[in-house]
Image (tube, rainbow over all chains, first blue to last red; front, side):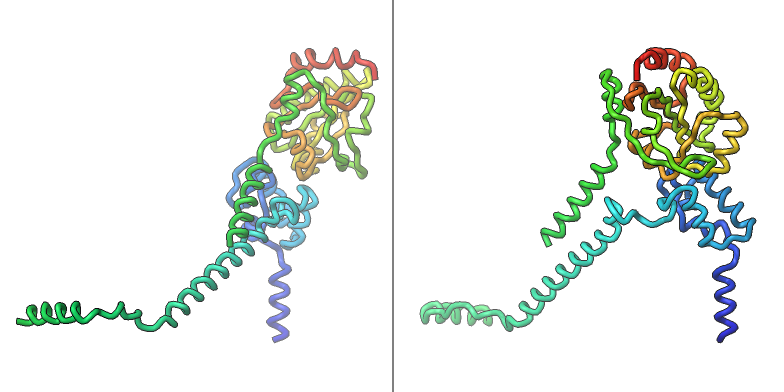
Length: 141
Length: 173
């Protein structure tokens, strides 16, 4: 077990690969994830990552080097302030909406289950009843 | 439920509004008005320390946003260096703002062209954003009082510099 833990630690902290880092950082000029960016600044970022890999740096060290050069916006994480907060807020609001919708649907469904058989119509007066009986008897013939 | 929906719509509207490009500098320059140049304290390229546009108050500043990965930017660096040599004795300077760049890449261009003008690092583009800079290179000429007197979105040429600089250099501090 200890050996497995040691292997995992070595594996996690070992030299990174370009695809390993590319999908966790942004192209700072295009605003897209680096692994789908083709702009000159994206090429520069990739060249920096390759240099860092050649120096044997692990993923976290490479990310730190990218932040040193481009600032924290290079990490594929939204800003904690301003519009970036929407990334956290929108899922919470959507969950709230979905929860509210489910609660309302459940309440309606329960209420409709409590209603029992549909109520009978108004009582027929004797004249109507005898006419209805006569007509139904005529159908039977 | 309605409140949550309204909040989502409000958030969307805020997001769209906040992404709108600021045209106030272009409008002011086009109208012949001079507005205060936005400032930010930025690290100096190639040496420790930080600086801001305010450190150059009293000088005419040819502030140029450039990056080593931007070919038109590096192509105009020799012209900017010649301009620096010409205007430095007249209480003026070119000020390079190196935009979203790897410092060693930027410094290799500084050495290659023997640039003598100061350069600051706008590593996350926050100063460029305040100038609504998006078509690099971009150049803003700041008068001795720290106001934007001219701007060029795209490469500069000798003709434009000859047109813009002499009247500003002649103005008193």
